[in-house]
Image 1 (cartoon, rainbow, N blue to C red):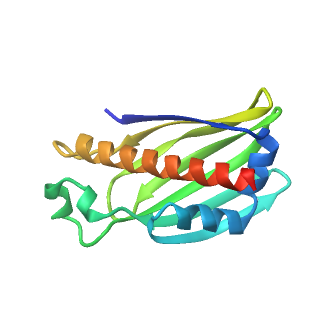
Image 2: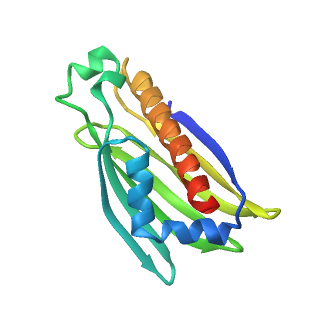
Length: 164
């Protein structure tokens, strides 16, 4: 059974202001670099009239994996994250996915960025899936935990950028 991920973030700026940051490749690079991610790379940020697609890569430290799993993988496994944002009413919605290169592991879900009073709310809902008997649930937990930590770091970075 997949491991759920649910994160909610609050910002003191309207959804349109937060979304404008997501269209800025320099912001995306800064957000990834600020997270302390291993081997961070912005693969693409493509803005169109219908939204923005963001693709980034980073590695998960092998030391964060259960020892039995780490022994089966060489080095720090690389992850690729894709976000496909589009307007949705007065806010924005994205489908997202995180895949682990060379492993049957993924995290998929949706994000919504909506106005909330004079600010906005970013809600992330997803689930990590690793179809490996015995170890799958442990790996799912690690993936969900790593993504939660990354999202917390990104929240702080977004808030600092919005504050100027």
